[in-house]
Amino acid sequence: MACLRTLVLALALALGGGIAQAQDAPRGAFSLPSPILTLDPERVFAGSAWGKRVTTQINSELEALAVENARIADELTVEERDLTDRRAAMPPDEFRAAADAFDAKVTDIRRTQDAKSREVARRADAEKLAFYQALFTPLSEVLKARGAVAILDRAAIFLASDAIDVTDEVIARADALIGAGPAADAPEAAPAPLAAEPAPPTAGN
Image 1 (cartoon, rainbow, N blue to C red):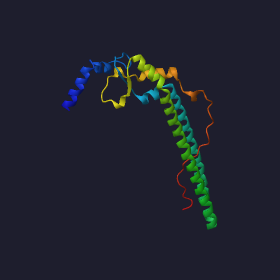
Image 2: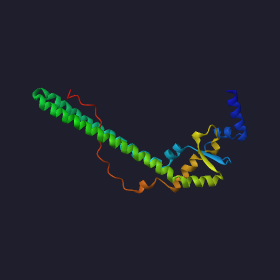
Image 3: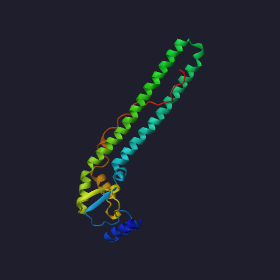
């Protein structure tokens, strides 16, 4: 522990007290001349206009999916209860056929629901990838404006002054240059019907 404290102190002195100042000053209040800059990629995406649009859209779709799932689950529960109530009056072969058909229906719904969930996740990942690909120009401008040679992921650095963090600057540049992304200008497609993943039926048991 003593060696670690010595190392931290030595790094703080090497930065000319920049670490202590950065902790007291608001982020982005001043800049420390440095050839190396840092940023938080996740915060860049979440704080950008593009990221906010994607988050709003994905959350809306997930909420719609949850509502649709609950509705379909209720409908299947009613259908299962009706089948169970009619069991005593049905010949065994007829009941078995009806129960098998119900099981197949539930399986199809589960498969459809899984596919829709995966599609939502896939589009969210695709939007994030497109954002980071479009981020090259904003990053280049911040790099040039700061006279630096590299921008590193803050999470990959053991210790760094907040004065060399350019997350907020990159967000501002990204909003100015790429905005909310190309999908923001495209007409929004009507959501496809959503399916539920109800509990396995018990009518056939």
